[in-house]
Image (cartoon, rainbow, N blue to C red; front, side, top):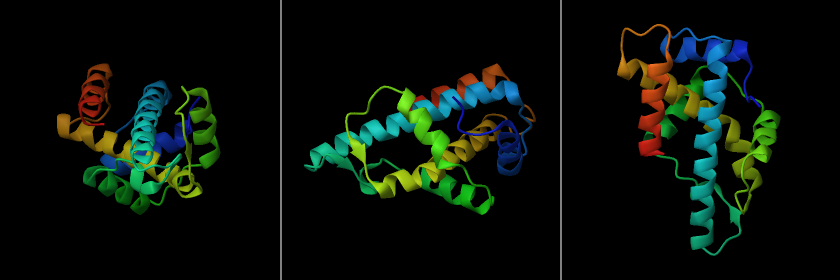
Amino acid sequence: MTIIGVRQFEQLFRKAASLDVDKNDLRRLSAFTNDKLHGLLLRGRANAKANGRDIIQPQDLPITRGLQESIHAFRSLDEALELKPILETLATLPEIGAEYSDEVESRLPEIVGGLVVALAKTFKILDPALKNPQSEHWDKAQRIFDTLI
């Protein structure tokens, strides 16, 4: 499942980092965002349980300063992601083992948007002259995010 349409994906990458992507890259983006969002929610579950709660609250999510800045950058791009496809996608992933609050749920589109912006900017850090990310760029960016998130 994808959480973002091809056209919006292309626009978002163009706005965030002047990159050209196409529908073939959407599969990679979906795998990336699914993996990273699931990881954030798993860590949120651990933080909630450590604080004696069964429900993940916003403060439980390990949102770093850099990801928070990417969330703000996403907001400034005047783009919006739909919550429903994100929730449908989460339902297909392995169970997290905890519920999340309405506030966390409402923030999911901006968190995913922040992840997309952070990914686009990472491509430009890897290669400032890059115009169209190739498999090697996706692989390097994935390894960087795997190390950090």
